Image 1 (cartoon, one colour):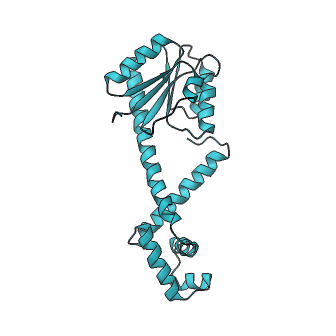
Image 2 (tube, helix red, strand yellow):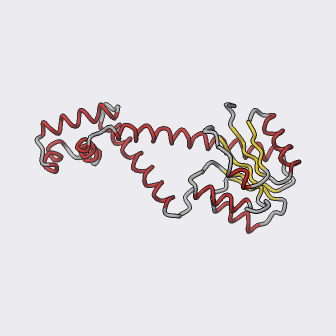
Image 3 (spheres, one colour):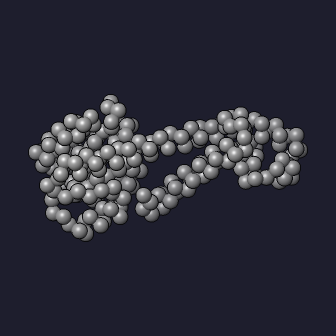
Length: 217
């Protein structure tokens, strides 16, 4: 796979698809081409930094409906919308739904490349952040229920004596659990532990917010 990233191009015009494919490949990106929303939805999406260059007006499911469908499925790599009509209402809807950019046809090559560069960079950052959260979650999963309780209280700023009182344990037992969880979490200080716990909490809050049906980009 290319280190530059992958551009998914969805447009019902074969000439437009071919031209865009040639353009993005000329600067080192990979390109995958689709003539409809259905073709794209049926495809497998490689786990590499990517973006979607999406025509608004497509046969069957239009581009904005495809954008909504992707969000509902939790597929959230950046979307760049294209239209030959300059429809303001479509532009507003697409941007509110999280589109990174909105380009009007005929497309200027530099505008396309600039938008793709920003989109792929943003997706690369998102994937790196996701990998970091996945690593934190993997560490948390190996904690015992008691270690998880102690971790949450340590992260809340409580001292061993307070934790022992809250959980009905001896301070020695708390120290043992604390030492074990710090080792499993791969941290050497409370400050490091707090950062991991906070990152985990924010990621969970963000996922619950998206799951509620509220658009959050």
